[in-house]
Length: 496
Image (cartoon, rainbow, N blue to C red):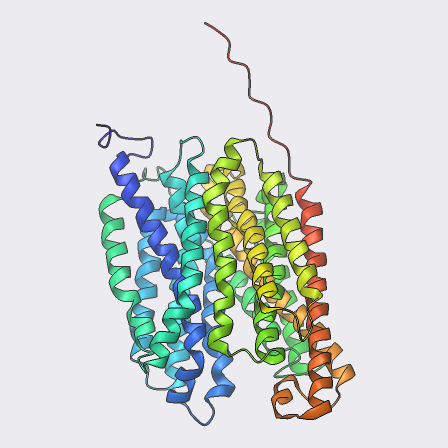
């Protein structure tokens, strides 16, 4: 029996096994929450604010995204300063507190505020969990690869069942349980983490650059608000948006300055001198941008152009989740056969390029099974990109900056997604408005006859342009991925 043998982390094999289950359960918790809430958003706002709820619905999602993105850089530094275990338990605890408060919210204002609190904790669920996995697997050959593969499988499961569970609760009139369901699982995660996670204590004192964290949060929040408001709440040329852009750029400049002069920066600039880390951040940002074009606008195409109900449109995520799961099952075997990080990244980018090109050829009569097949290809593509990038950056970053590097990957993915929302949304609206002036996309459902046919055809053409643009981004990703270093051949073992 070897279950009690201590590993380099100070944990027995049995403790490491339980620790991995805890991490994978946390990934499920994070993915489920994102998908469950989006599936039940309409019933929620209809109950809490039937008059103005639909106008405030975007903030139900945005409040969580703003808070979680703003907290990401701070989580990375806290992991390096306080230790991954403490930060992991703290993040789950804040997330559970926010979930409980969301469940008892009595109006939209309260729910949006509590979603922001939930988002502060949610920012650590995925990112800090990957730091914990890296700590658990530290010292094992190929260990982090297996952890990342299993994470992809569980993320795929969460993406598959999330919309279904959210729809069930919403249809039953029990939407509050989409928040309450987090609590028992979260309590078990905290209890198990407290008992089994054992990491070496830090031997030296560190300080947290709270000013740098605040500047990073201000920059990220400004960027997200630009993408939320620009072209929707306010015109891109309005003083509000232009002022917000100027303030956001100023925050970025101040943040870079702070990182250059701070004794212990929140995102050390020297990380960008490491080739793999620098390229990993760039690729992850482009991946986030392309994902925005492939997921959000596929759902929009299905509902607007094909008349698919929102609850049914969510089922088109299942093929994508199957693709993610398949990659999680096979990636370890492919790595054992010699697939390098560069191979995975180039292959994944090309899968996505092909899938998005096919989506860009969609029309008003394209087979829905073809759309499902293209979503499967996207799942296979993204499955090769997301987990492998985190592991590559973790392996290349100095151990003392493991937390910052890991959460940095997630941070750049989120910022890329925000830029994608602005770029793709602008492309779609401008092309559609040029063909159908005076009728918004939301107004298509009220049209009839030739006017409706023309509006739908123009909308599909605009969405196809979004997919082609996203395909170009994926092709650029493949070109950048070619710059990743190839693995060095193993050193010969000399006989004694």
